[in-house]
Length: 324
Ligand code: PBG
Ligand code: ZN
Image 1: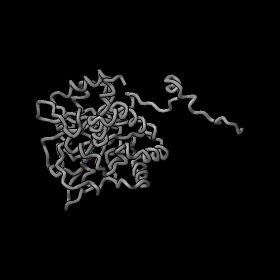
Image 2: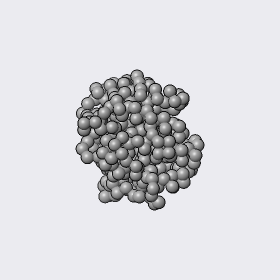
Image 3: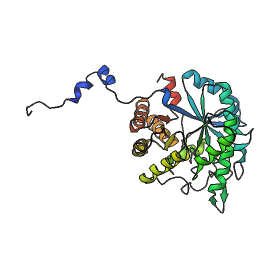
């Protein structure tokens, strides 16, 4: 078959837009996207987050209206983060029946019962030291934090959260939460584990968004970004502990990890395009260096192509308003 003609001509299937879309391998839709939101108590107006242009803290009093607006645009799911004014050493507001974690789920589910509400389950936005658990001799006490995670998860489930999403990066957190939920009668409340969560510099803007009090870092509980084998191990541990779905966070710089976990587990897999990934795209677009809409679609498409079923992204509402 040697001739002056190429043996293969992949360009045949790229000749026009119809052919290209017919042969496109990867797609995403609103069914795949979760919008993370920040809700602040005791304020009256939206607060812009400077490090995340276009994202605002939502006053609790306007949460119901916002959830209705998201639903009208076609958003199917939100993940709630609270910006608390009630900080203490343990983050005890999180398990109060009338605390912010519970109120966010209650308000969102009352406003739009079909909206899938995922409750971020951690303490860093409710502790006065900003760590994701209880401090003991300057270290985060794993097992004491597990007890509190169980209490928070039950409170959120009682308030109507569909999915508990533990992000504290404590060992055994999925098992502890599953047991606490089951014992309280919430056998149908799902757990979306932040199963492979790296100690990433890409969370920078989130600290402003959440008003974090943290001094120092989370490297004694979140993962070393350089570790690929451990990344798979962490997600498989959460699967054994009873997670209903897994997550890789951040997403864009960890596509190899998404692929590894996709091949190691049959559970649904999500990926979290975090605040720093959002900010990099926004600021580069604002500087005129890139086309925002195209880069957003390319970044999300790449995350799906790597093997994610769901994507947490702050761009979800922009895409919904664009009609996807
Ligand atoms: C805290 C938490 C963080 C994010 C979600 N939950 C920050 C952190 O671990 O420091 C990051 C989200 C983002 O950057 O978009 N448990
Ligand atoms: Zn945390």
